Image (cartoon, rainbow, N blue to C red; front, top):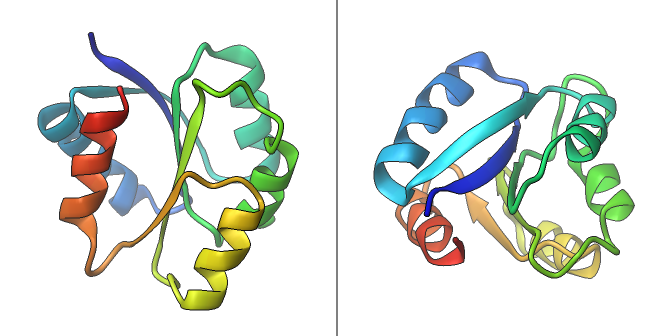
Length: 120
């Protein structure tokens, strides 16, 4: 069964690369995209989703705000943070706010896709 994901990423280039790769490598369909906190939260209300891919630095707002707002989501809804700033402090803060995992865009894409495939 194909997974249903929301992609929260403000870079069109990254979105255009991730969407087909997620389908091909992890059998996940991106059912909504968002570039801001408001768009991300609205997408969670409009769609039945099981996975969110979340960047931290958005066009407006922070992915940390999204994590905080979705902290009490149902257990079947997972959030993976995909960022260029996956420092130890960032990873710890994301975990505190309920992220299921944090991946560095530049060095951990294989692990990211493997995790996506396992989660659905």
